[in-house]
Amino acid sequence: MNDADILNELIITAKAKFEQSLTPADLENAKAQFLGKSGRITEFMKGMAQLSVEVKKSRGAAVNLAKQAIEAALNERRQALANAELEKQLKAEALDVTLPGRLYPLGGLHPVSLTLERIEAIFGSMGFDIAQGPEIETDWFNFTALNTPEDHPARSMHDTFYVEGGTKNSPNLLRTHTSPMQIRYAVQHVKQHRTLIDAGGRMPEIRVIAPGRTYRVDSDATHSPMFHQCEGLWIGENVSFKDLKFVFTDFCRTFFESNDLVLRFRPSFFPFTEPSAEIDIQFQSGPLSGRWLEVAGSGQVHPNVVRNMGLDPEKYIGFAFGMGPDRLTMLRYGVNDLRLFFDGDIRFLSQFQS
Ligand code: PHE
Image (cartoon, rainbow, N blue to C red; front, side, top):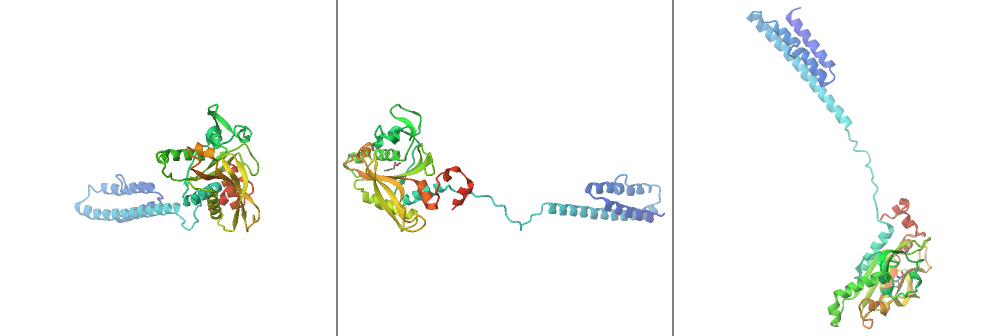
């Protein structure tokens, strides 16, 4: 075989070897067999030392051409392998932008929280402040300051959760209503305006609602040991039952988004109001139409309570009410078992996402 044949065959074998290489590492190994230090091309050139200059020249040129051809084949194969690798990677990481997105479930507010927000917004728009107070109360704020006599049944263990702490005369308890906030808020308000009041000036009116959790030893379809109340209090020099009627009617109509609703003030008794009334509402249309539904207790604040606020009952007068946001929520959404609100069943609660 002459040189040209040998070189041609080398090129063909090199190309074939490169084609058979399936990874870059294989390819580099194959390259070493031809172009490396002890590769076949290098070996071929080694034998040239003893040859004449003429032959060296022509052989050298032929070897260089062969070398170039092998290098070209090598580069081509390198490129092909790199492309294949890239293709593979693109395929593996392919994004199907036509797939539907994954939906994450959204949380929502508890129906009673929705009601409380509504109550706050409505009374807020009527100029009422919004106050929060402690759920662990003292006997003084929960009963005594509210003119509730020692022997009132609400003070018994059957009705009230007493908790550790407090003093013998004023033990701690879980508040049984939000009415203690009448005293707490008014006392703060009066303290703030004491100088003005003592100087015979005009005290800015007390106008507040106090929503929150309350507790009683009670549990059935319409009573839960923990429930919500929202207190309302308006005290000034000239606040009367007519204001209570106006405010509460306006509230109910806004809350239920209906003017087709009437209110009834039914005489009642609370130690801290005189006179006292239960407030009933009646829808004139819809599934509940015609039935009287009790929604709040109310009354003119008792003089003893006004005194405990630090004010002169001869000068200051007003009304208070306490309503049940749980009840309002049941009426608004047509729920007939109060316990559903506190069972934490997601199937029930997720129906209220607004
Ligand atoms: N605190 C009373 C109750 O829980 C409601 C009420 C509040 C009545 C304010 C009169 C005035 O039943």
